[in-house]
Every structure is written in structure tokens, then in C-alpha cells.
Image (cartoon, rainbow, N blue to C red; front, side, top):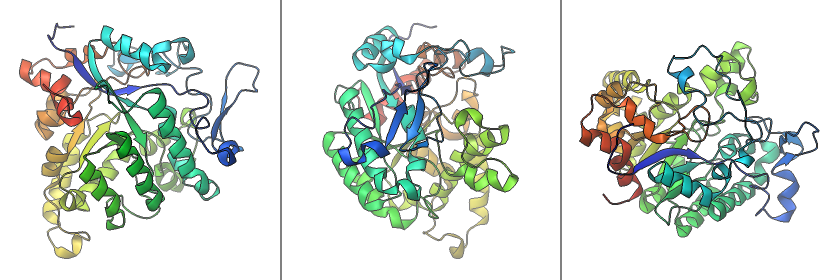
Length: 400
């Protein structure tokens, strides 16, 4: 790795949640119906539960049986003939303090030459869609509020300028979303994680949700989209005879293609861009994480082509937007995978739209986040600094 002469910002860091991350702060009347971990198994693994049913997206405790950071780097770069198992040579997150404890993580961040990180849930990215379902709807926001209180307590919202945690929000209940958004803003939260996909028959850019977007814009909150659970398998896999909501480790190849890969962000992005969300709220900012970016050049080219073909008022239900590629450059930051072509992504979206992210400590990511510099040959020192630090610093409100 090259000596950079500055500390980097990592826009894709994770923690592994403790068993009580939903129960610790929830009202007692909801405690038995929210997310919890059944530890009755004799093999040492917990079973993830939502009330009296299995949690769909995760089966075992999220940190019970995981691959080490960077375990799949060679596989994803095509330099290994392994089978890509995410839990090969598995470890327990609870035995690695920096995976679960903020002070230990800060010490490790110093070793990794990281100035600041965007901290995103592990378990928390796989819960919101199941909470939307009718059986659980009344505990959706009690659960979301409780989880966010745990995040604030254990990791913080970035007041120290180092660990910028993302909070959880769902648009399934707009009044409750607004209440929780106000509470989070008052606490100093700067990043909100929102699942991709439609919300019960509505685009997330439908004017129905404008009160939410207006407050997000006013407060300068950044919306984070990260891979996780959502409606896509139910919408797209079941018509082909595939499971609707399998646990992530039981996804078929087709489930992965339609329900966890680029399809989910491409469809969501098309809705946001074509439904004129940034036209109505020109101050919105978005961060796209762990979807990679190899899809972006072709997607922007395709969306621009469709935009030019659709120049008729009846084709713009929420007002005519700007050119999709222009919207993306203005409002979005994206974290490419280390195996993506950074040159192609920068050519399509501009260097100012690209930020660094390691996915640490997940096995798909990098053990040492600064390794990403090795993928940036051909870029000037100034461009490397933008990708590795300055673009994210601007997004997070940090100085140069």
C-alpha cells in the first residue's frame, strides 16, 4: 500500500449487534414481540427471531458464524477457485472486541489510518421489510425506535467526528417516520438508512412521502441505501417459482439476482430519478453502499436514453425531472466494490460521486481499508484523495 500522507474516510463500516439491540430500550409491552435471539440450541448458535417466528433474512445470530474480514477478497477478484462461502474458516464476532465495541473500534481505526467511518448495521439491514408485514406492523416503530436508541448508546451519531452511525427508518408509517426523524435530528443523527424498493404500492418518490423528504432536506440528513432485505424476491422471484422470503443463506442464484444484487438499487434509482424527487427537493443527498458500481455506467446511459424518449407531459407523473445522469452527479455518492473498474465509474458519474468503502469487518470486504488505493492506479494523487477522503468529508461535514 502507498503512503498517503493523510487519513482516509471509510463509507462502509459495520458492527455486529448484541442479542439485546432491539430489546434493551423497547417498551416492556413489546419486548416479547420484537427481534431477539433464541439461545436454546445446543450447538452454540443462536436463532434469530421476530416474536414467535423466525426472522426471514437472517437465520443464526449475525455474529455467531462469520468469515473474517477480507476472507473473500481473492475470490471476488477472480484470483481464487474457492466456492465463495461467506463463512469459510468462520469466527465469532463476540471474540473480536473491535467488531462489537466502539472504543476498541476507534483504536483499530487508528491502526487502519481511518479518520472517520460511516457505520452501518449488520442485523439492522435485514429487519425492516418483515416489520412492515400486517402481523408485525404495530411493533414496527417501537422496534425501530428501540434499535436506534441502542445505536446511539453504543456507537453514536458522529458527534466525535469519527463514527457516523446510520439510523433505521421505514416509510411504511409516514407519521411515525416523521416523529422518529425529528427525534433523530434532535440527537444529531446525520445518516438515515432506508431500504430500497416500493413501499406498499408507492414509489419512495411519490409526493405522498414529501413531508418526509422536505424534513430530510431541511435538516441536511444523508439517505443511505445499503443492501439488505426488501420486497424484490416477493415481487420478482415468486412468479418464476422461486421462494419469496428465504433466509439470505438459502437464496437461490435467482433469488440473489433479483433480490439482493444490483437489480434492487437499479429499480429504486430509476424510480427516484424519473419520479422527480430531486426536482422537488434539490438539496437531497444520497449514499449508495454495498451494491457495487459496475452497473452504474450502463444504467445511467440507459436511463438517459429513456429520458430523451419520454419527453411528453403524460409520461412524467410527478413533474419532468432533470437528465438522470445529471441528477446522479449532483445528488449521489457511490461506493464501488474493490473489484469494480473505478475508471469506468468515474467516467460515467465523475470523480466527485465516488467514495471509498471497505465493508469491514464483513468477509466480502477488505481487512485493511487502505488497500482500496491499490485499485486506483491511473488516477492522479488529487483524484485518489477525493475518492479516499475528501468526497466523503464533504458529505459528512468534515474539514479538509
